[in-house]
Length: 370
Picture (cartoon, one colour):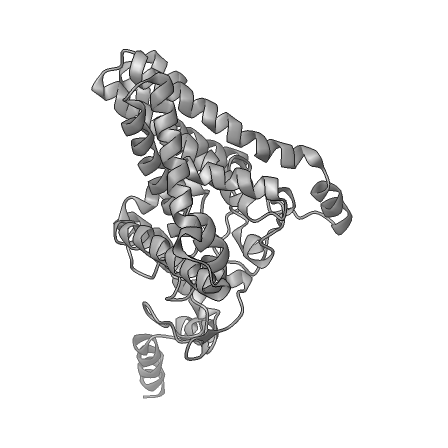
């Protein structure tokens, strides 16, 4: 938001920070593949300072939204600067707010889950709590999961599918819960989350002015776009084996892309150690471990999101890695994209002499014996 106060095109300088400065320092600082001992994990898990940090994000986001709403109404901003304000706030809500909301929604504490859902509502995405915890973690890397991007699917094809699919999945999950418990429709959590988002927008409008409502909606759209771009790359092209119709193998580390980039891992509360998150959803971010068996992204999330916005570049970088990973999944037939030969067969063919190379020595041998 400070960039907006500088005015003009500086209102968009946060884009340079996210997609320029962070990737540069990711490259400069390098990777972090170290894991803690069990004793250190227990110590870190019980350290309240990490929990406090995530809890403080919720009031921090609300303060930023309030200040942004005030700027939209009283900052004397041009249309150009208003656009920068919405994008900047959306990046803060998406990169910090939804990511921490995701972290808190997996916790056993009622306070943490409440703060997590509040952060999701700050981006008009409260229903994500239902779908993610009860849908995505069960169906990841299958066609039943709207948040798993498929081989060859561009980000622009994935985005409308995941936004629609997550909402419909959340509604189905809630409808099934109400039916099991014999509750009427007004006990559904989904309308409640949208009411909280509406109350936020109208509350900021009452406190600062009418422009708070379009500002709130616009920054929510940016936050969702950015967060779903993270979803896009976390499981791209990865599939679980279907053991029999509708029954899949358990979720394993090979079903999530990890990234060891040190800087973005710190910025995103270790979200890039995604395989361990799926193995232990309730685990606190500071104790997440790196898995050797998980496929590795070639860079941090900031760089990979930028690549995802340009599908030809994304495919050029990711498809060779994805196919190399698929070659390790011996005996698996993939539902989307090619099923390459196993690594051993592929490597054997690579080392075989070409037919031309076979012919030439044979000709030379015959000539020598003539």
